[in-house]
Amino acid sequence: MKEQTAFRIRPCADDDVTVYESPDPMSVYCYSPAIVVLPGGRYVLTMDLGGKGVSDLPGPKGSRKGYITQGKVFVSDDKGRTWGHVHDFPFMHARPFLAGGVLYIIGHCANLMIIRSDDEGQTWTAPVRLTEEGDWHQAPCNVHYAKGNVYLVMEDIAPHDMTVWPVSRIQPVLMRAGEDANLLEPDSWTFASRLAAAEAFSSERLDYFGVPFFPENSYYLKDQLNCPPVGWLETNVVQFTDPDHYWHDPEGKTFHLWARAHTGGTGFAAIAKVVENVDGTMTTMLEKVPSGKYAVFVTCPGGQMKFHLLYDEATRLYWLLSSQSTDSMTRKERLPAERFDLPNNERHRLQLHYSRNCIDWCFAGLVATGSSPKQSRHYAGMAIDGEDLIIASRSGDERAKDAHNGNLITFHRVRSFRSLVYE
Image 1 (cartoon, rainbow, N blue to C red):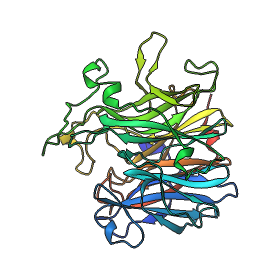
Image 2: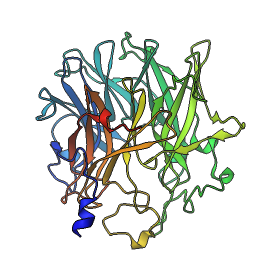
Image 3: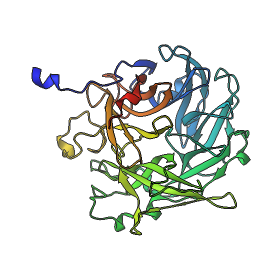
Image 4: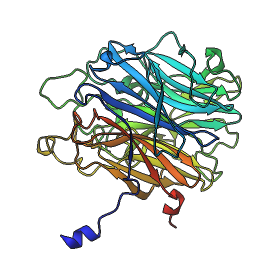
């Protein structure tokens, strides 16, 4: 036993700080953490609450098809050691970001919603709707800056009659706005064309990669293993600036979408690309490899769950924060009772990788782990602060309802993260 213990990997950011704790773990769940570093050094962290107990909490709340949610803003002026709650907002899946020196939070509650702060997050405008139609979705993924513009992805769910998770009908939509524009104005934003997963890569055309892994169900069946049709969701945006990359665009008009791939298995992300046209419109399409074949699924450690991509100018590397899977080939009925949903849904091991090209990934470290499969460390967001990587995690302890519905938002720091790079 002592020999085995000596070779265990030590998590590089397990000394976490609790930012928020649910007042009732059985009815109020902690979701959607995201984090940004302001120029003056302040950290701003956003999250949202779900569950039947949210309606009894004080403060503004939103409703998405009867699902009640509340977003929260926390700030830290001491490098994450302590946190103060400064604001609540009535929408979900939000992310904070800077544009033109101004702080915004964008999310949705059926329609896209946005708020703005001009005093480093202390006070906020009233929520503004950016859309008047659609069924919007999206976890807080990354934000990209290029050519004086800010780019991010939100997702519109196409009409459907399924009673299972409609990931096959999700349409990732790249959004662009000038950094110096007033992003509370709907006209400041340009939306790319839509492409639903079912239209881009139907299950009938997939074979030889074991996708989908389980038989698919479009309608929920009680006491059965339910695997929705193959789809994509929770999308990041990346741009390849290396002229040696096969998918590099020397004109800088191509952006790639890197999304969680729902296949029933593990280790894949789903991708597409968006091309800016001469007239300023943006078109979403599938990428191709040199053989002329389409590329939809690419290798991605933890691509089966929500992940976060971050490009570091100093190392010219892409950093990937994702969930580590260790037992997805174990039959569902033989997994521990506290494991959530399908075998590919392991959520308690948060890992870090880096890559020069978003295809070939090097393992950098195990960031944090829960003490059991029920005690999640997942759905995390990250930002760079000097030499460190700071992380906000959707977490849980032994009191959590389950691995999906955690009771904590935790803050983690990977010190000197660039020193994890090896040749």
